Length: 258
Length: 258
DNA sequence: AAATGATCATAACAAATGATATATAGAATG
DNA sequence: CATTCTATATATCATTTGTTATGATCATTT
Image (tube, rainbow over all chains, first blue to last red; front, side):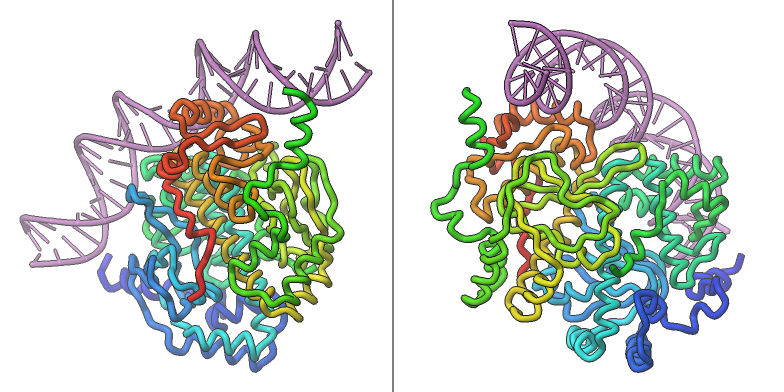
């Protein structure tokens, strides 16, 4: 394999669904929560204008700082994390294309966690004032952002479930299912899998396991012909089987209006 | 010990700080996030008017239902929880006096978790329309509720840290520290401890441990002369020592404005 | 008073997971 | 091309934590 082809797949992962990238992912994500008028549509699309490519393993926001702008993910996957004094890292959330981190955090004086890229990404900074103007002038966007936030809260609660009462293989399976579902919702995954530079250490830091045990679990999942993780890609062999092990119920990702 | 004195402490826990109960706990909690004008003050106090006493181990909201009102806790402790198909329970949050569950959830069509009391409580229902009117007419309250919600999110993230990368004794210690700090903020705990009908099974369902192992941990904490849990009370012998084991940093409970 | 049921305590054993060490492969670097 | 670094794979052993079982205690009910 040549270095050239590698670079290409890293920076331009195959568009999984036809037309998937004609819409900005944030439009795609937010319109799932209700109709946006053309003006709102255009305004959101404009957010991607100043987007920049960033490499993998790079911090976008650092613990202790006072952010003056939110981060919008357009391509790739970003995570929130924190370190314990002992040095162990805990990832507390993933951000996939269309996710905004975080509409409300920009009001805080001190971040208590960092935000960093996993693989190569394309992200845009959204200044605090721009964000405030959006929610003022575009009620449809404000509403959609509220639902997006509800989904985020549900997701964190689901992680508490995952860490608190599921076994190692269930936890890893659940995480792989969640990422699959979220990436598919914005056109970055097919039924067959998704491109994602996720190391076994990352999985360990997310699921509260050791890297060695994650390796054991991944081998088992491979032998069970459910999923293959590696080579910067998650290849799903048996989606139903994987979801069954994880007890994965996607509804927490899409809260419905009452 | 006589049955009478037990009943008394259960229904009327000693007021820990002088004057602690002259203010409604929600006023006490929300004014920590910024000044409230007298009108807002009165409006919040009015929320407690229709409060009712409820016994321990009772569900206030049930998974799958569509809530038409939020729950405001005035006395006692309430928790959110969910069951896995296998039957194991995971508690995902505690609500102490002054906490409102949940300003935004009442918009959902289907709750995906239940809310139930731990010990005897006093709670008030707040209809959806009342809540909406509050945030419309009282910007100070709306602002404070946003901060309260930020604190709640921070807390859930802290739980992810707790479950994901702390040992059994650290997890239990951290939970006991968090409850102590939150109860003290609203006048329901002193430096010496707090009244709370928390079973070892509850602790297990919160920390992702088995009840047997929680028992082992509590014995160790007792032998280390840090804390004694039992008899519907948490008696803190060495707060600094307990916080040290837990690596407890209270700042996540009080996000500061930027 | 007897019976019931919940909670707590503890022991003995089993299972899951963590820690350490080492080897390999691949990518990045000089 | 050699080198270095990172990620992966696997084995061995240690430790933590879970499971099952049993008895004690205490409150509640009959």
